[in-house]
Image (cartoon, rainbow, N blue to C red; front, side, top):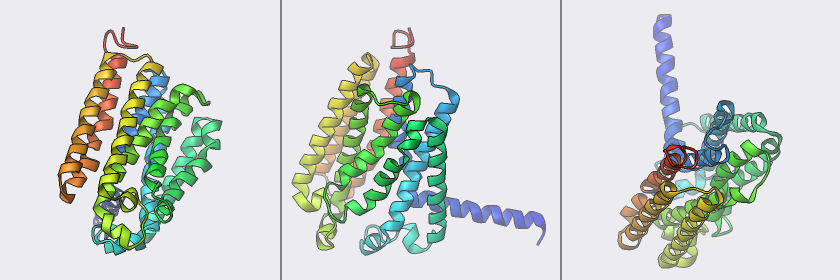
Length: 303
């Protein structure tokens, strides 16, 4: 075999490995946290963030989110293997090796640490808090139905972290968008968990659906998303945003209303649409309308 053929074979092998890891950690779900984190640093910087700061924030969010999901897959191997819905995932089927996912997790952790160090001392100081949030989530479902809210807080740390990366200090105005993100993620994760209601009860997995039933879970998810909309609206006043951002919040409300209508009236097969697919639209939409409010003529910074 020539050196060229060996190189091509190596590239194909690594591409397959990377593709498997991407599927295992659901790389596309970075869309949940990333747009709101971008909103945070745009609002705090007046629409003019520095390039290096943006780069390290994006790397930190990417590393934290995907490292967290990889770690969750590793910790939950036994639970996922007992669940017919998740038993065919790449890690359990052998399409992704345990060793490779551990390497990916460690690399993400080191990248997260480096990114925090490159931002400011406060971000570096808060790395252990991030580690506790990320590492703790996988264990919460073993003892509390509040696991969805732990996940929400973990994901919302990307938003708060983006604010802190620019200022290096906590401010009251950072909390509305951060809380909105936490309640949003918790709400759609509760809906997602409806798929496993019976399995979770049989296997003593804690979740809002297994504790309160389908109706109770949908009520709690609905209240969480009402809180999301409330804090998105409050964010408008804290950053003196205008009509574009307000329009984005209205559209977000319509998306969430559609999500809950589908969850209430549809069967289990509709839950992925309600819990994930619609929510993949919501945060990019908020980002789009925040951008319009910042940069369009007559907007906050576009006048």
